[in-house]
Amino acid sequence: MLKIKLICYIIDSMEAGKGFEMANKAQPWDDSTKKKRDRPFVSCTEDYEIENEAKKYHVSKDIIKECCEEIPAPHPRKDFEECIKSKKRKSTLLGEILMKILSK
Image 1 (cartoon, rainbow, N blue to C red):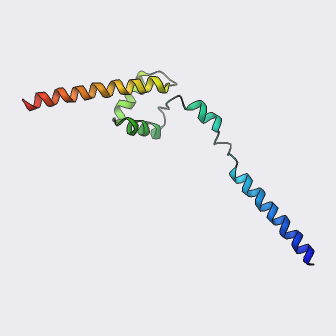
Image 2: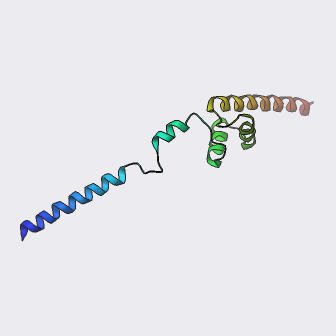
Image 3: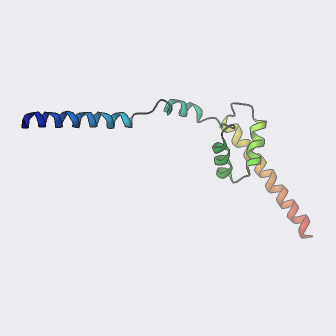
């Protein structure tokens, strides 16, 4: 009887280990190869990505949306970042000009 309990315990332990291994495997919707392919592009249809880009460059979401319209899909990240930097420079210059005008 003790041998049977021991065998059952071993089998249960093995099955529990198998479940743990399966839980750590990538899920079908979590395709890491797709993430690597998507990394060089900005997804303008995803709100979280627009918010992340706005926070990353300290600009408004409007600037991000303007670049989404200017840069053709699939929105290469390199071109997209250049667009953001350009608009940020222009808005900074405009702010400086307005400050000079208002301070007179």
